[in-house]
Amino acid sequence: MSADRPRSRWLPIHAVAVFAFLYLPIAVLILYSFNRQGVGGFPPHHLTLDWYRILFADDAIWDSVLNSVEVAFAAMAIALAFGIPAALALDRAQFPGKALFRRLVLLPLILPGIITGLSLLMLFNLAGTRLSLLTIVLGHGTALISVATTEVFAGLQKLDRAQEEASLDLGATYWQTFWRVTMPNLKLSIIGAALLIFTLSMDEIAVSFFLIGRENTLPLEIWARLRRGITPEINAISTIIFAFSLIAIVLWYRLRVRTEGGAEIGAELLETSEPHP
Amino acid sequence: MFSRAYKTIVTAPPLVWVTIFLIVPYALMFCYSFWSVSSGQSIVHSWNLQNYHELLRKPVYWETLLRSIWIAARVTVFSLALGYPLAYFLSFYAGRRKDLLYQLVIIPLWVSYLVRAYAWKTILGSDGVLNTLLQYVHLTSHPLEFLLYSPFAVVLTLTHIYTPFTILPIYAALEHIPRNLVEASTDLGATPTQTFWKVILPLSIPGVVAGATFAFVLSLGDFLAPLLLGGPSGIMISNVVVSLFGAAYNWPLGAAISLGMLVIVVSLLFLSEKLEKRWSFS
Image (tube, rainbow over all chains, first blue to last red; front, top):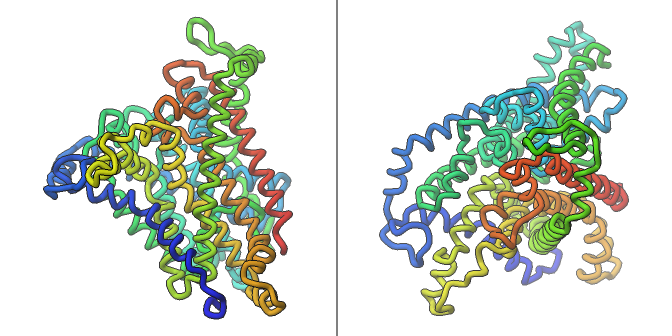
């Protein structure tokens, strides 16, 4: 297709420039995590691993990493436990207010985090719930149901309904059909969703900002340190976060290529409009 | 084919969760906006329009809201200007490298917001990477102070963060364009430029609308980039809300502003859905 169309000269140049704009800041961040002199100062010299050594001895950071991992797993459980049924409901049930329900479930995906965070803060305040990691879990879980729903819904759209019909016709109960036919077919979508939810929760800051108790998650710990001043130690932890995000995304992408076969992967994640059956 | 019980079992739990953790909180936000704070710093649960009067009376709220809209508008335009040609290149010219380049677009999308905003802070500061580089090559003799703690820094950083958000839906829209339409246009004698303006661009409008909505809405509500990079001149409306919920301790007024933002965002989503439908050809 592309061979018979005239090539434009500035399009590839523009593409290179945009990729540079997207990646150079990250490259700079990584480079300066090895700079003995600190963040800034050109050219960087005396490359060192000292900042990583300081980082690995920094208990406060690792406590916050542990908190973030716990929060991410719990948020993942909530988002999947409610997001998978929500996707099934959107795919196969008809009920009054379904369109509104779909919009509400997907809303936190596009809503600025401050609104989700503050509205939940008011709820917890009214209920007398003390802010802690648990309130962050509830916040992340609620916001990320949208991700589980879109991912699993996309999987359901590809599912061959005849398999489930056959299972039911042959005498399997709904319960058996769900576990033996529906779920195995959705396996890759669910793993993909889980990976995405985990990564997003690990990185989330806007909602957590309002729901934080005494214990920090990793992004909030970094945030607190940024207010005090910047050191290459933050570059070092950022580099490690980047490396882990990269692994998660590449894994997720491969899963999606297997389920979707390429093309506009992830695009429906950005679509809040009516799904096209 | 699915029984009533099956439908109830899959519908009820998410419905209950959404009610408790989304509908009730939004309703609370609505209620709070009509309450007030007593001199003893406790919430007075009596209904009045005091907060809305305050918002209308004090120009500082309007000015901050307008500045936020102006920042978000610039971010949207720059993100589209960077994103559209790249999406077009990916969809029509990238050839075998399409898959790799597409991955390069989604990677920054899922890389920590904080990490990327922080990266810009280290680049733009007065002894940051850019200023020391400029002095190293003798382009400037003093650090350029306007780089950090300015609306410029906020727009730059948010454009960096939201450009991938515009690329994905535009790319998806471009991929949906049947290639035989493009061929037909060429066969009927249209130049590539005409084909682009008359066929490709109009058919990709739903993607542009979706991308623009994302960039605008998310940057409008941002408060972290302004806190980190904006300085006093880069304060946005969400920062006002943050301070009202924090040090200033006026939740009701903060709730009124948040509700205003929620209304703006939901109206924009509604509008963009209408626009997407109007322009989609299927």
